[in-house]
Image (cartoon, rainbow, N blue to C red; front, top):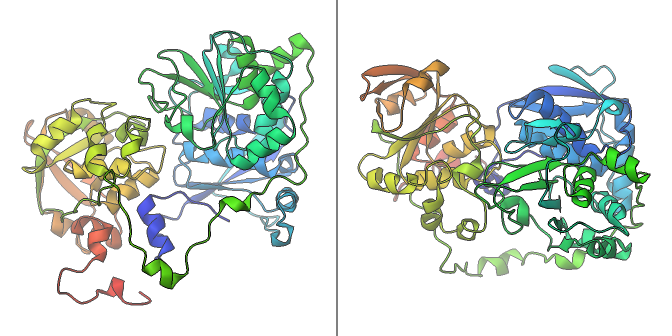
Length: 536
């Protein structure tokens, strides 16, 4: 399996049988040698890559792990590493299908599905890197970026108010069983909130069968329901300005649900040692003081597999007769009008580098209940960067629309397509950035926002908020014969800048139509287009 993140609209189109289009990435071969030392785990492997390369290091790359070090990593260890490949900006991550995968499939009753798939012995890669697992140490990402990684010992002693274990980044049984073994017979000190966010009901079943749930509760942990929860700011919001250590994949500003949060990312071992001491603590130092040996919890045999939670779909004939129900908090997708031939509007926001989709369309308990209510959700758009953005956008939406100027890696993080839909609803027609995160760039195209890039990144410094920019001749420029370079005139400063797009002919058609959906929908009275004919 090659699992590649995309926006929701592209997932829906793929489910309907349409192709998924991607720019062919380079392949980054990462050779693993050695074996992880005690108190160092899979989370530290991916944090090491983020320490070396930052959040843009994997852009337009597939990470392929290989080498003798793989033998010591379980399938769930590999999941932990692959999960945060997205934080490097990678298209995806892949591991070989080997004995570790066979062991995992055997454990969940699917051993007959195993197929060995490994790279050829003389396989070569576009980029090469090596990590000696035995040389790694516990690492931690400081607020407010997964790429801001340092050794735990470098920040040891920082006070901790909250520790949360769980999420998609550390979802396996061992990621909870190791903390449970560490806190068994011990107590979390006053002033520390120790939160356990089980990944699934099945994990909670297995922890309970083994007595680990009791050890966690007895130590003072709060057990929350299964799901994303704290990772997307739905509960477990930390106290303002207090350090929160989490085994989560992301720590973008405000993602936790607290405006002035201070979220750190680390392994379950580091999180638990810190919960027990009340300060950021290297688990090796904690273990040395107490003469504790590293826990090695046995996996349940067999692990829980609760299929009773799954409901099969209705037969197609019956499903076709079921009316789609929408409650009052569910709105239809707004109408997406075609791109005009000329854009003449103000720059309502000038954003810096590495702006995340959490900052464009916030997560958290205030906004996410309106995820299916676009007009209401639009009121939260970009408010982390400019609380007045929605009001100013509404003021010019009907008259001119507006533009956004941004730095590098605009739209990193979640595949959340609302970060394209709600600005579009508020009249955004173009973004000019130094560069984009892959999924957000595609989401902008899907909803009819023109993503442009500076030919000269230094021109970014010459544009300010409220400058009025003019783009003319867009329909010719985005025609099949059009050149990828356009001129932008800054009427406020009487300057011009060269910008370019990276749109394929298919994407040009979508942006001109106002988005993928209008491009697929023939005008009233028209017959089916080529893209609608069976088999097209």
